[in-house]
Amino acid sequence: MKHILIIGSGARECMIIKTLKKGPEKIKISCIGSHRNPYIDKHSFLYISDINSKTIKILLLIIGKIDFVFIGPETPLKEGVSNYLESKGIPCIGPMQYYAQIETSKIFARNFIDSINLSQYSPNYIVVNDIVTNTNNKLNEFVISNKEIVIKNDGLCGGKGVFVQGIDFNTLDEVKSVLSHYPILIEEKLEGEEFTLMSITDGHGGIRHFPPIQDYKRLNDDDLGPNTGSMGCLIFKNNSLPFLNDTELLEAQTINSKVINELNNSGKKQGYFIGYRGILYGSYIKTANGLKIIEFNSRFGDPEGIIALNLLENNFLDICEEIVCGNLTSQLTFSQKASLGIYMVPKTYPQPSLEKYDIYIDPKLNTKNIIFGDVEKKDAHLYTRSSRSLFYFVTDNDLLQCYSKVYQDIQGITGNLRFRTDIGRKYLTQYDKGGVQLNVEQSY
Image (tube, rainbow, N blue to C red; front, top):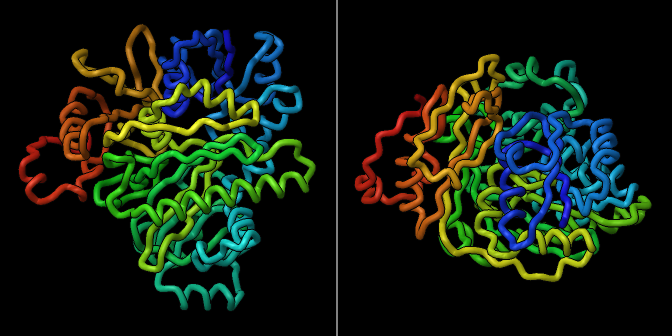
């Protein structure tokens, strides 16, 4: 029986486990997470709710042989957990520390993109070391020459380190108080349709791509409010998005592949014995001037990874085994149905909540479509914690059916929660909008 260690305990890791368990083989799951996720707890052989290097070392002594490790979140990648495990002969799906910089440092990513002759896909940008005391005319000239700007913290911020002019601030003075560290990246603000393209790779040049998915980062309807980890996502039937043609999709796939291959080459020069192994998440925007790269992440998106894995028709365990063997040769196949999902979050989100509130789920609801995130169970009852609570998604023949069903079903989940009521709404025709009679509130 295969024994797999999962690092992470959010909705993304729940879906990784669910997808691994779909195959015919019996597998044993152990987990190290930040909290005790009810689904993972139920399906784990051993569960430790404390992610750090010490607990990982102790766990390996306790449970013996591990066939491979799947790392879900970004922080363990930044801290070099893959480096330690690989040095012990335990293969990881999750890149080593050097490669993970493509996510953990936005400045590294922009410099790397430029170094591999992909600078045409970057917006105009500059690196600033101190915006508070800045006297550099270059910054002033940049702000003046670009209609609006975006300010990005360099390191990991849980999806909350980006500040957009016209939404989060109007003048530079307004953001000085919220910037916690330097250097920072200042980029021109791009306008267009955003999408995610995730690719999976074996560290030796084997690369396969998932379908494109559109993510909704802003907290409130109409893309207003602060940035979040994500409030929902969607994909149309036939693995498509309506604003993206085949040529543009191939272009994004080509960029992801080039970044992976060049990271592999760069890693070899740094003395790494394997290349980038795991997921590369490319965040793109289609502008009037073509595709641009917003950023890269070094793991499955949450919730994009949930939708992508649900559509996957391959035995995911087989794919993972090919990856850790450095021999990804299978072609990925996907359901051609549409899918749409929304996150339910505490009312205080994205600010941490000190209170834990009851969550009630109608027993008639299809629980297979509920993916637990930052929740806990006590005395057989479910409670919110501080971050995104649960993800509910629907897969159906087209987006209209998904939209109708997800917002009808979501009324069966109640508590001190909020959610966006417009995920996918802009793609419905006026006729469709008139025909979908939904009584939904932004919060209960």
